[in-house]
Amino acid sequence: MQVGNKILLGVAWCREDERILFEKHPELLMFDVTHQTNEEKRPLGIAAAVDQNMEIFTPFRVFMPSQQQWVFDWIFRSCIPVLMGPHILERTQLVLTDGDKQMYGAFDNVKEAFYPNAKHGLCMFHLVNKGLERIKCKLRRQDKTRVNNMLHTFKTSVFTWFQLGGVENVPEFGMSRAALRKWLSDLQDDEDEDEDVRHNAMVLQDFLLQCILPHKNRFLVCLRIGGRTLDYRANSALEGKLIVWCRKFADSQ
Image (cartoon, rainbow, N blue to C red; front, top):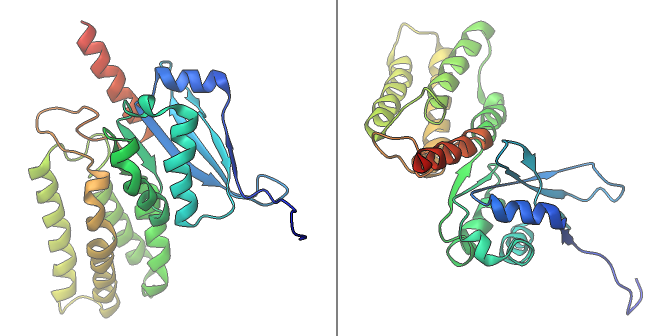
C-alpha cells in the first residue's frame, strides 16, 4: 500500500425497515458470526431478533476484520448503539451469543453503559456439544458403545438445566448437579469398573467443573421460584420470545 491509500477494515449497516422493527421488538438480541459468505472471506457478523409473529429478522450486519475482542468491543460499544439507538437498547432484556469468550467478554465490558437491563445468555449447543467435541481426544474409546452411553447420559443431564421440562428452580438445579457429580465420582471410585470407564468419568468431571459450571449464571440467566418469565430463564430464541409474548398476553388480560 502507498501512503494515503485506504483499506476497508470493517463496516456495519442496517435496513431502515428492520431497524424500525427492532425498535418495536427489542427484548431479545442474538449475535453470531458466519464464515465463507463473501469474496474477501471476511467474518460476517449477523444480529437476529424475533417479531410479534415469531419470525426472525436481522436488525443489522457487520463485515469484521477479525474476531479479536477489540472488534467485538467496537460492535457492542459503537455499531449497535449507533445503528439501533441507545434508548432502544435500554429495553433489551436478553442478549444471546455463542461460547466465544472474546464475544461475550466484549459485551460484559459495555453492558452497564449500553445494555443496562439485559442479561447475557450462552448458546448451550456451543458450550456443551462443541465442548465435548474438543475433549473427545482425551477419552478412551476401547468400548465405543459404553463411551457413547456415558456421553448421552452426561449431555441429557446437563441439558435439563436450561430447557423446557428441565429444572424449574435453584434447589432442583442443585439436586441435579449433585446427582451428576456423584454419578461421575462413583464411576471413578468403583474398582470393579473398567479402567477406561474410570478415566473417561474423570475427564467428564473435569469438563463439568472447569468448562460448564463456571458459566451457570449465563445459562441459568436468573432463576425465579414459582414462575417462568424472561427474568427467570431463557435459552433459545424461540423460548425467549415466547416467554415475552406470554407475559405481555397475561398482563393484557
